[in-house]
Length: 106
Figure 1 (cartoon, rainbow, N blue to C red):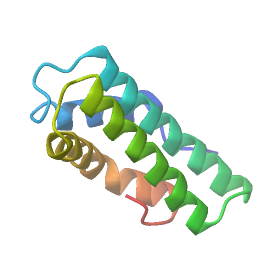
Figure 2 (cartoon, rainbow, N blue to C red; figure 1 turned 90 degrees about the vertical axis):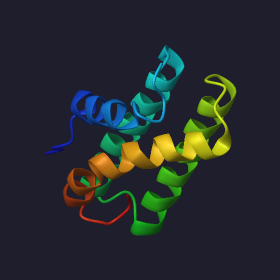
Figure 3 (tube, one colour; figure 1 turned 180 degrees about the vertical axis):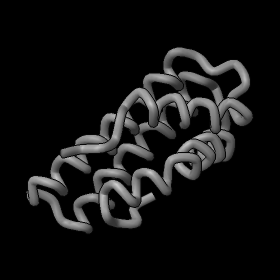
Figure 4 (cartoon, one colour; figure 1 turned 180 degrees about the horizontal axis):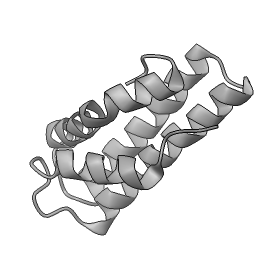
């Protein structure tokens, strides 16, 4: 049974990224929600045995790049600021996600 909760992950990530994005807009929150959704999907696929370690890492990397694109274009952040926001968000949930998925992907 999956243990990751999208809303909990989203709250933790947006709180952690708030320092990098003080006036976070809906587009940034949507990007972080997609990341949270992706973690839940990865966990479900790991439990079902339909995804391997490499595929987990690839899926996360793809979603991180998508979030960077959203933050740089929609939020008007520099690439460095976007990466800092995403890294802060991911660091805040890394223990929970890595433990739940059973793999260090964050």
